Length: 381
Image (cartoon, rainbow, N blue to C red):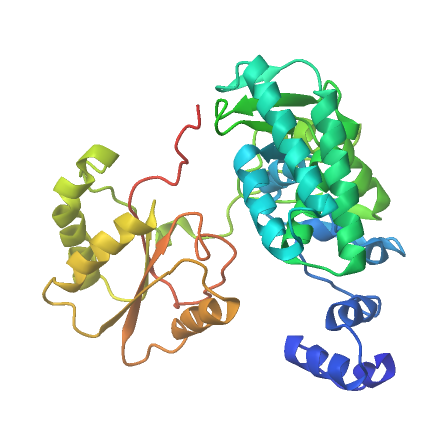
């Protein structure tokens, strides 16, 4: 299969899948083997920094790392080093386990033990947005039992609830084993919906260890500031360079304005017609394709309906992002921006969704961006 691939030219996802089927090979494992022959491999952070899915073969031979959107790396790695469990999670997995394996199965009993331990812990401790000082040993032992029983069940014959139980318990036990001053034990939910998170607060040693394995690492982003904080978050040593470079985009091409409309949450329904009217006005007065971003799907849908009712918007094809879009659907929408000789496109999307980062619309494929509200998450207490 490897020899055939090296003489096949372009090997995209479909070609690798066909080759894997032809030779009775897992396409994913085949792609990992093919990666060893590549000069450049583009992938998610996880393949280098996530201890559960990192692929060591990608780092063999002294690969160099170019880490884009590096301001997101530390939070992502902190999450991979953390673990959590809640009564709601455990009850749901136990219910599915009962259907799949019966209530007498070892996994069902292990989950019941974890539920009882977490309930007892929440009854003894204030669980409404609080902090524990020490690991609850009984709960940790119960989660280790869940991990063991889920592993045995997977070995005997896999099932969705066994896989869910294994993943949940593995992350929790991994974080528990590493618990030290860099972690916090966060509680929430009260007795009925108790939740305990073993949250990593500082992942810099792990990030730095990964970068040291590489021949060299360059972190870059439009928002890596201030440098002192970034160096602390990502790990660094004396002599590491920090560069702030000017924007490559000509400022003369930028025309920014702010419409004075109250778009606070409590006022959104009242001012929705104004927002729609302002968007329609801009599209009438400015040529080219447009991306319009909103803080939520519900708000986007409301404005989208109102904009479609505005007059004078002929020659514009309207589209909107939907939840859980497949990669093929996303690529089809982006492809429409490159084929607009007869009709402009206005795509309504969500901040933090599939289209707010990591897309490339070169040349004149995108000339207008409208942002409604800020993409800030609501405070979680």
